[in-house]
Length: 65
Image (cartoon, rainbow, N blue to C red; front, top):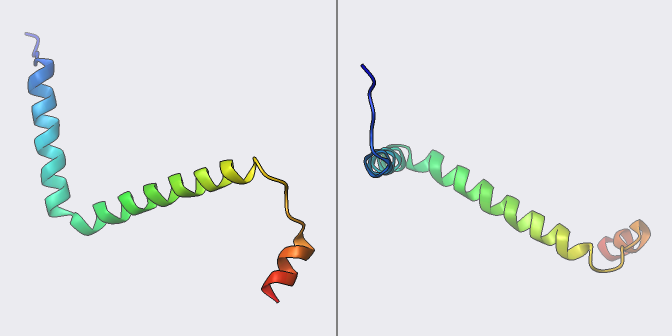
């Protein structure tokens, strides 16, 4: 006997499970989401930086010192 489930029912079950996880593990979910957002921000900054000229290490150290 083969068990089958419709796409809509599977979507509903997955949605309910995700909501339950978010409610029960709010802090962990928040940290995961924050890391993902930071990763996207870093990737965007790197991509943007590649469009411009590179800055030499001595110039950076001069600005920091």
